[in-house]
Image (tube, rainbow, N blue to C red):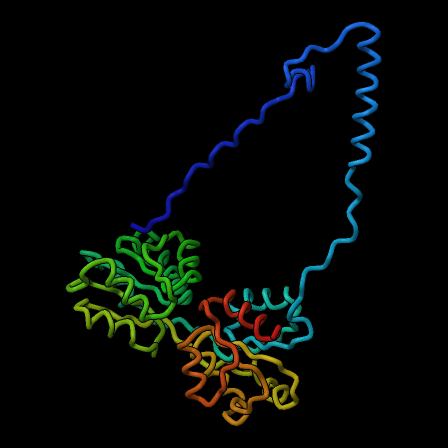
Length: 323
């Protein structure tokens, strides 16, 4: 269940061909014969050419440049450097000048013996829940080392917290069985419960060390047996955001994006709480959990994505600056 299989491509349909008689072959009329027929054909051809020339498409003018609603805006991206490319690309495409200032980095844990045992247990777990792309990468990167394959992950039903995590799984050869409508831990609990009674079901949760417990606690409250295995940790990035504080105080940053609670905490540690809470920039967050962390640390949230994705965050920024 969940293992991706290839599918054949559908053959293109053939298009009808026009025969040597051109329009006559399509209408069923016979071409006229003799001199009168030739003159009539010439007049018809002259008329056709005149109409074609009068309706000819004029050469296109210069292509209109795409709209750049973020032109002139300097926007900082605090996401881990290895994950920042998509957000940077989308912001730059809309005209923003992007300041890449990662406040965290992702560090896989060295001892993953518990993960290996979990992936090879018999019977397999009923569910494996991935709550981040990072967890997908750490788990799948270890599979070859342990002589395992994506199908070993897919022995269980697989849930992904959102489309980015689902896409990361698909790229690794695992098609998720469940992606909730809202991309937060509480929505995963609701979505799993909607699949049927979860009492007694076994759930594996490979995730970040120190992540919040809303998901395992919610599933356990419904009677599921949940094994939480930390597979990576987020640590403060040193040096990457060192110049950001000065730019904020100089009024040179219009907005700062936060895609997780850890990016918020790393930002505060990097620039200091007085600068973080200065209100000299628009804080743009990817969703309510990140927004809550920002507010707890004294940061006023100006922009919150309605859809908890990179695209949703960019859309929210465009709306904010377009007011």
